[in-house]
Image (tube, rainbow, N blue to C red; front, side, top):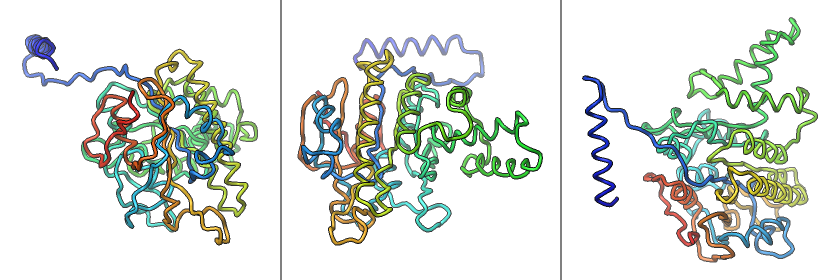
Length: 388
């Protein structure tokens, strides 16, 4: 800050003090946000380099051959080799959101449970504490098969937390809205009312940290009203899997105008059923979704030429050919730690490929830097090579 700017701000502050009623406390004024939009695309469910960026015969041709030409690709990104760092979906997602490798344990101690709590603020909290961004413009778009990740919206850090949380768009959230509406409309049969009321109470109280005070924002309620009017109540009309996430995200860009959004793709994880084609098909579906997201941003005035995309997997996958089920990732093998990141948008160097080793926890401070906020608790540092 130069001396003129400092003096102007100081004089403005003194003037405000002069007119403040006696005894009133000074209230910090949070500025509005006018920086770039950021869309984090979790190329998730565990996505390897082999089928995406390291071959011309890729299952993600849009990512590899089109979008990579518009930005900087970090082909050597990795998750830490420390034994304390798990190569799981929830852990990788929180690495991306917080810029730290913390050891997580399911809060209910369930087997394979991933109801984790971030110990340091997420990028959503950092943004909302620094700028006057409403919660419906900080969104996590989540998959129906990973409900535990519905609750990564705020950390347990004493200076942040629920007051600065993001919101979630997901099939689970829509079902909660729909059940609440059906009860209010009286459209549920009397015999089914006790069961429906019990189910709604369970869904609304599923995040114990909000102490059961489930209050959806009016903007999100309006979003679901339009969704219901278009797709109806059955669930047989709207898309499913990662195609659902794409549709939710594109509509959100048009109706809610999020400044920061994270899309948690996960279809790759269907490989756990045992067929390699489940995995490769998942990669292709995510690639098509990524194309739609970028095209939607290019078409919308609120996003065109003012949006940065950050594409990064939650984790990689094992490449042991002798495993009974291919492409697992919980063994914490080296290939399960090998991922990548692509950053595209204004201020980002186009057509750059960086093979140097970089770290997954660099994503959060990079997003923070793009949006003009500090990330003091992050262990990683921003990917400065991407900035043009």
